[in-house]
Amino acid sequence: MKVLLGTTNPSKVKRFSKLLENCDIEFITLKDLEIEDEPDETGKTPEENAICKAGYYGKYFDLVICNDSGLYFEELSLEDERQPGLNVRTPMGMNRLSDEEMIEYYSNLIGELGGKVFAYYLDGIAVYNNGRISSFMDRESAKNVGAFYMIDKASTKRFEGWPLDSLSISKETGRYFVEGSDSESKENIIYGEYEKRIVGFLKEALGIK
Image 1 (spheres, rainbow, N blue to C red):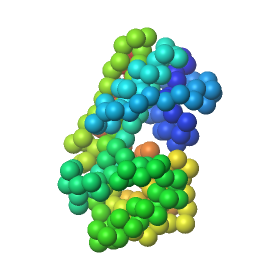
Image 2: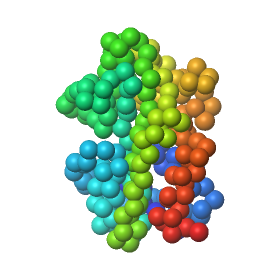
Image 3: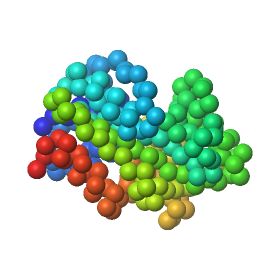
């Protein structure tokens, strides 16, 4: 089975490949199909944006997985304009930041908030399957299971596609995501029943028994 991942991010390819390992899926990307067009992401949540993307890239392929995520700091209200939310790469109305610019911006913001914040990523996932779109998002599980710390001092190491892993620290080990094991990286902070729910959703949406 071939599935298009609506992304050019190599870390997302790695993440979904691991979630659906042993499912006999060959993942292809927008780059593989030379797709450069992008949809307007007008949703108010990661799930709504993932749905927008899945519907858009469904024009190019029969089976598509799209993912969008937002970053949230417990120290900021959801209404605070400094809350990263869906605008992780374009905070405060800025032009799109490079990886290093993101690290600098968030290091300064976290410094203003005391040097350490309690954070979590909220993921929205949508699957296009021959004209039908299914979606998944679970804020409470993301907050309870996937929470971690971010600090204002960056590691010198980098994960391509996840620049903020250089500021992120595991609650359990106290190590930077980029300096720990695979289980401590951003794409693997989902585990246990939360991970099983995501895998179950993906299999059902793709028609995998």
